[in-house]
Amino acid sequence: MGARENMRMPTRTHEKKPTTPPVYRIDVVERIDDSPRRRPDLPSLDVGLTIAEPGPQLDVVWDRRRNKNPDRWGVIRYDLMDDRCFDDRLLAKDHQHIVIRRLTRAGHAVNGCSTVYRTYVIELDGSKKPDHHGWLYVGQTSKSFEERLAEHLDPDSRLGSPKVRKNFLRPRLDLADTNVLFDQGDALIAESRLRVRFEKLGYAVDGGQECYQRALDET
Image 1 (cartoon, helix red, strand yellow):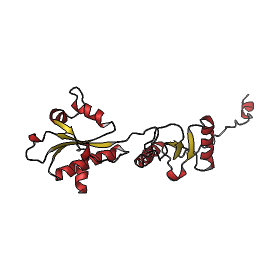
Image 2 (cartoon, helix red, strand yellow; image 1 turned 90 degrees about the vertical axis):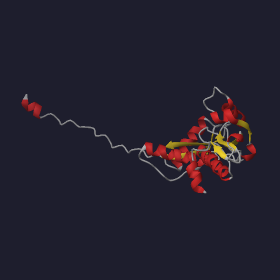
Image 3 (cartoon, rainbow, N blue to C red; image 1 turned 60 degrees about the vertical axis):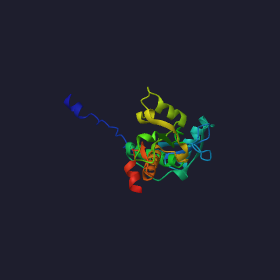
Image 4 (cartoon, one colour; image 1 turned 90 degrees about the horizontal axis):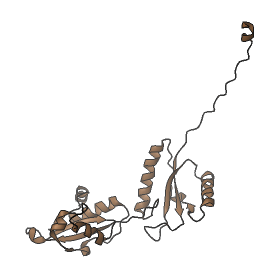
């Protein structure tokens, strides 16, 4: 019995082939459906992660998606992509956010977001600030000015400024910047620049404190 056991054929083990870890890249593709746009002259874009290499491999991936949704996807925007690649998916996601913000600031609607921002100015009761040229409130919003003003004046709203509600005099949109802004960070610095500008003109100003020091350092 022992001899037979010694004569057993060795068991062959099936070694697993080592797998290559995925490499992540950012791809950018135009949308040709009715997705909203930030600027009418710029296409809406989808910015995502892919493990397909740019070129024929990525083209095949998107050809398949176009076949499934021929009215949604347009061309791959290689001109808006960069060459960076990442072994770590979290790092790739961080870079994806950077690309999204870059394209957003350029005026593209990205991944379905078409929000735009504008600054506004409200005049408050200057008689309560006798040592100043007047009293202003500056802000930025993605809503219509009328909707934002209603929030300020609504006593039950937590989204408005008590100073505006108690001291409102009139809208002063003629004092606001007319630029449409595509990124909230840019909108916040724009409202702070308004604050600094009017303070230099002798006004008391509320609002615009988010990026106040940065705006002050620019002057």
